[in-house]
Length: 288
Image (cartoon, rainbow, N blue to C red; front, side, top):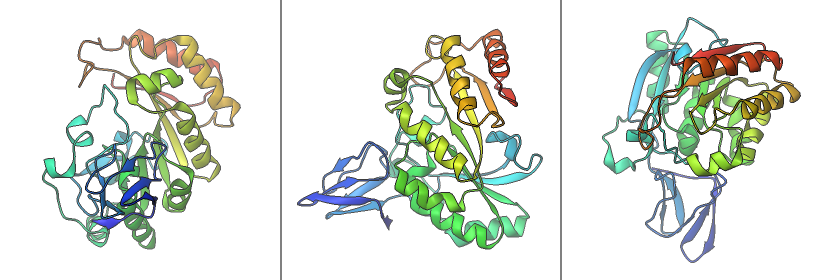
């Protein structure tokens, strides 16, 4: 465990987590929505520090990052936990559980960096679940990685408060950010979050000089409305991100949305045509 920097005591031994907009109020011995941060006697701790449940060597394109050092590989890792509740989560078996429900590796930040150096892997990707829920581990790994001239890649839904994000940004080189729906109603209904926070995260990282690429998973009956997609693309271009690559991904039935059909490829192509017509330079289709 590692004590968190992002919380405050509110009454007795109850604490309020300040990492993400949920601002979970957590009683002694209990965890927040992400299930990976727990209150012990009035102090908030990360339960997953140094305890990834998944470690793999991936092509960087799998993140997906198509325009950041293409053709290279990265060491990918994930800890349990997520602060969203997406009904279609591909990795729900590790994102929607508590740390006690899954065996983990024990890998310190130094060991992680040593693996990259010894294997000639140029970067580390914090991915598969929501890395911002284990920000203490990401931060320590990322600082050490930069000392060894390794890249740090964040694959995130972007649901985080400004202070912790700004603390981490200097150590992040690239990020793929899920812009799940251009609708606050969809965010609330399908993922338990809010659109404005994600848009703020995208803008903050872009303005800070982090290389970003965006992913939009198009789900039939949820966010496949072409007017919604057009508005999303207009927002991207209006905010100076026409050259930010946009990945339009195909949905397949999963988790709590197994009755929803796969996205027709024609829908993806129509969305791509709209994105290009609105001025986005790099549009890629995923899961096709």
